[in-house]
Length: 407
Image (cartoon, rainbow, N blue to C red):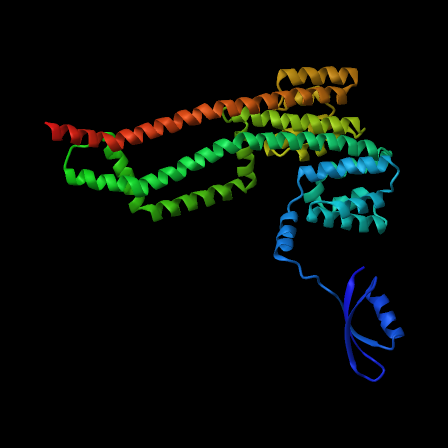
């Protein structure tokens, strides 16, 4: 029960202060009046949290992740299947949510439910948390009476997507760390190491190899014009970021992502995996294809792929079959087109899309493992070549000096 701080005056007019537990300010005010105290001020006592508690709250108040959403959908499926009312289920999950921001959102959703709104409409007010796919699926589940099945399908989709994202991040973590270490090492060497050797060589007045001359010239340029370099890098980064934030820049970047060597194939397969997963959920939920493709397009992060899916939807609206619309889409290979054609003929679109998603899941797993196995030796060779060239550039003049001394 919350604790309130109050101020009031008793029957003699004397100021009285104190603390009292009550369910609300109104209940405390009634209690004080019964005790012949006229309340002047009643405020909820704020607990003084320790630094650790405050820092823990900041950490827990983070962005809602796929892990939080998948846990939410799984728990909602379990509670609803057990016969728990929707509002009670959401209230229960808001009290036990690990993420404080998600807990606050769920409390607001529960309040909207209590006010008479449906779950889908209540969730729709938080598009940055739930997304159009989840909201659309929940609203379909409410209309068809299959909300349990919707939450179960969403759980599988979110868990698979979360696993894929974690594997992708794990695969690129090592190369990013190595490249950053190389960049920092190059800066340190050019600023602190090479200038020292350059002074020694200048005093010795010996002919230097071309490799050493180029290395010293580059180091001199960096140490002399480093403010210009920093400003140029900043302006270049800002200009690139500005361009990528424009619709044209985002579309061009997302389109070219799929054409990158090695990693482009992986990104395209991840996009098709998400497409197949989402389309399978939509097809199995009984949503009309045209309406479902809108949800599918919104679930795809790549803007170019999203545009192609919307073109596919437009083709279906004009009377084309799914296979004909897919032929016009530039994302699919002959294998997917053949599978979609078979699915459309047999009426088993959802099952076939699940097979496509399973196929791409295996391909993505293999690509991620191959990417890790491929990047490690490439980085090792690059580092070895860089160290060898710098060592030769620095020490070749020393060997020449030693030879001259022995002559």
